[in-house]
Length: 297
Length: 282
Image (cartoon, rainbow over all chains, first blue to last red; front, side, top):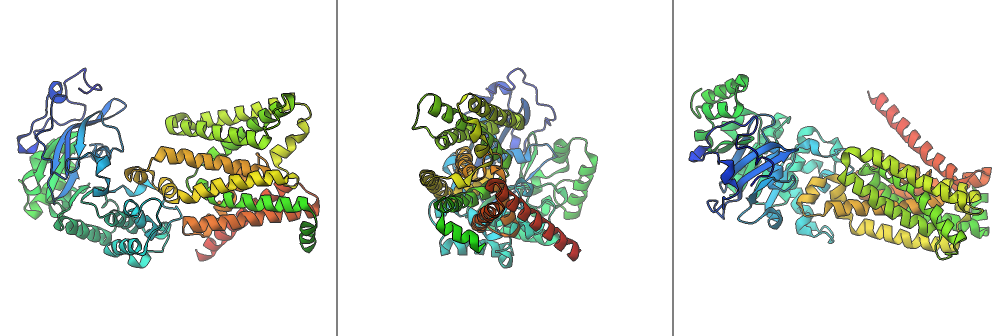
């Protein structure tokens, strides 16, 4: 039982009382603690079961229940403050959960670290730090290298390969402060690629990047999906959602809807996700009309 | 300069000073780099001030109660480690009050030291040495202890290079890779504490923070990687210590403050040169 909210069964402030796709309905608070999670497939790359996260007793995520399909490219979409970044951090145990359980291929994160790659927001680190792009990417290999072993040529080549994949092979020796914002974002992506994970979680990798970087990153995300890896991406630009992602997870404190983009990224679900923010809805409707995806507004 | 070199060859006390300076420079280069890139110089400064409390208590017990085995350097080491763990704990657990608590801790550490110095017979005369250092009075026994501390600091700093790099660069990433981040943060503070003790015998506890941070800060202007920065900071620290010793000896000035003037002057010079370079390019 959630000790934070046990005094009320009402939805938290800002929460949309929408029906999740696939017929899933929000669970009554009184029954939450009794759920077994047996309905979650063990082989799912990522299973989130009844996860609630709160900061100072204010719910940021409420009763999130979700299974990521294997080999999919999932866009996590929702308004500012919907808990998108918190969702990623909570499944990675970077912020504490008030309740719920998260599994990667049927095991908790601490046992599956090597299988899970994470690309944080670019602002999360000090870019004046004295490391080269290659040094940063090599950090992605640390789990494989071993903490007390020297970096071998094979690992260096793997890191260079990851840098080449994001189009930065020529800048491997450059200090990270001398890279543009888009290049820095690609270095973060290369670090995750060097890890050779099976599940990737990315926090707004396309935010404030140039067009070249956006094209490069999207091409890589598609390659990862085509290789059978599962990629979840927090994304803020509604217009590009139908083009970039084959699945979406619409989030506003709780899961509003999830499923294949064509079926889930609908005007109705967006209205539930974004509430009365008409400008955004109009943007989305325009995108849908242009690309012929989803239902008309 | 040649006269200074001749005198170093002739006088053991100068040889001891140079040896202590060189040993301290290695720890300064390695740990100073971590401290600067992790941006925790204010925490290292807090630890440095707490060291006076340890020195005061150790000297009091040594002189007034006959604890002859307890040397000021030993007291400084214990106080520095306790201060590092205490400040580290505050820094990790009470982030919103971190600056207030750290300021209070270092003031209390200093006050404790001054009070014990006051009640210890004949110690007031040593106060200047502890505050501003007196590298010319370093004994062979102290050099041995400095050597051992140096080996521990540099050994740990290099052995855990990858973990410390990960923790300093991207704490979240380190945590995801399974690194016990808080443990390594405390280890880093303990290494900084031991380095403070080493450097305090060269420049004293008031000035130690400048010698810990300035060589690494100057090196940071030129270096593209952490290990390059460590080597450069070590060489720069050696330059400052030898340069300060030479100037101080030649002009009959206190060595500690002279070393710091060398370090501070170099930092200002490099900063000004870089600013001028930027202006010329603009």
